[in-house]
Image 1 (cartoon, rainbow, N blue to C red):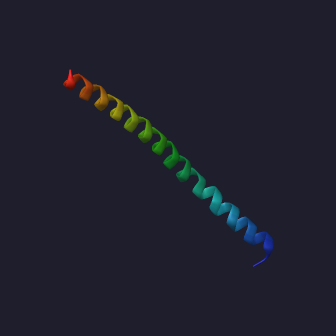
Image 2: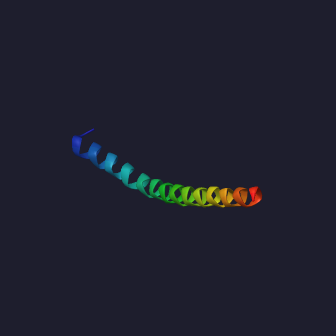
Image 3: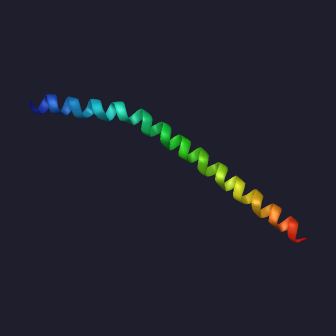
Length: 51
């Protein structure tokens, strides 16, 4: 396989995979924010239960 063809194949694979990875990163960020919010709310509820 020529170096140019090999490079094209590699770049094509990277291009096809970058979309799903970006979606996964976005979903992960959203999930982290939701978990933080849930933890904060649970802390508030626990403080209220102690009072």
